[in-house]
Length: 167
Image (cartoon, rainbow, N blue to C red; front, top):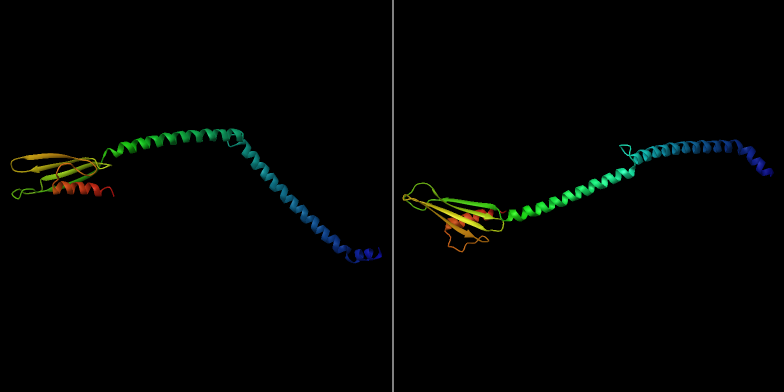
């Protein structure tokens, strides 16, 4: 016991000072934690009441309804897009035009061949031959970029130009 009294007599003031520093540090830390807890409570209260003063459950239910409505609209748009894609495949998409002069005694390229083709290569090649006696127009069907009728070089070139537009 005598040694303990001697220890406290020598180091007592230092121990009290160290304990005081520890208590002040813990008090500061406690004050900091209290302030952070108060901030969290305020944010939690704001979250639970929502921006319009309603509770969080009402806000989430409203959001779910909006999401469901959006999903419904997206599905309707997908259906419409698929329908348009099917229609577009059978619409004229590609065009090839060739102007030419079939007769040496005529000036200018007044004759032409036009290929009008849909998304799968079906369509028509229209040719016009212009001469001094008149103009003749011919039409030949296309099925998958081919015709069952004989094609002139100009008609083949018009089909090739339309085909190259596909990219």
